[in-house]
Length: 416
Image 1: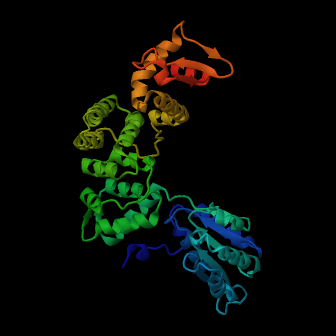
Image 2: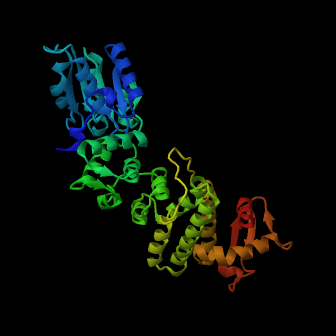
């Protein structure tokens, strides 16, 4: 039996980390008026559908459920839910109509959205809609009819506590670091964390880091704020190394994230020195990859990146740590527009000189700077802009090259 079913919460109060959201949903049901719906959103595995199921069970409400991604046309939706919006349940106090995965409706099926709108307006019972992404354009009309409640990600400590409860019930021993690693890697998805736990614990009496490594980390989109804690705090290079290779960013980007946050993670001067020394060796191999175009060195680079926490003697942080994006990446993002303008300038000059952008940047721009700064530079025409002759440093004559027309802004970019 799957553990996600075996250990499913029996009451809404048992749902980890979602107490506030459950209270908001209860309040909406208490104040519900015909013609208004409830829209629940959030990433998969946070308990959107489960919360409605448990509230219906606790209050003796009949749950009428339909998956909008399966029933895509207006006729299908009307056939499934049309009569149930008016008919009174025989053996329950009332009923709740739940339409799941409404963001899975095809944009082509515009009639399906209109059918759901009509159901909300005419229904004698509460209608609850569930979506992973409620902000897509095809749901705009539905949002105006609904109260929107967003489910947050389940916190890492809440996931870890749940995983420990399951392992205790199954009589399986575990390492604390393994549970924390699984909880962090789940990225707020309780359901996937439990699935990963069962996969890793299958046939084992103890869950250790070998089990975590054999799991292979199910592919899911993760950000660096989820990856960094595991890299900094795990005790096995093999686990951290696999995490770096499987990250949604390339190893060079992960390198700069590690470099920028070592000082945040490590407080002891000795530990800081050891971590930076290890990362500096990784930087040597990173440079060799670029200079020699030898990609085998990247494996050595990743090995050393994964080893920044090896030999760590100070107790790792157990609470939240404020990691920051690399300043290098932020600076490149800020200068993206300027770099694009420079590329266009290089291309413009290259068209006159028949050189590549790289050759213009390395061979011509240094000379252009000298020319622009010299006192002899200058034929300026207010109507046509600045006329810059390239004959001064070219083997070709003016007639073969022609005069390059550069604006004052472009001249300023060259000098900068």
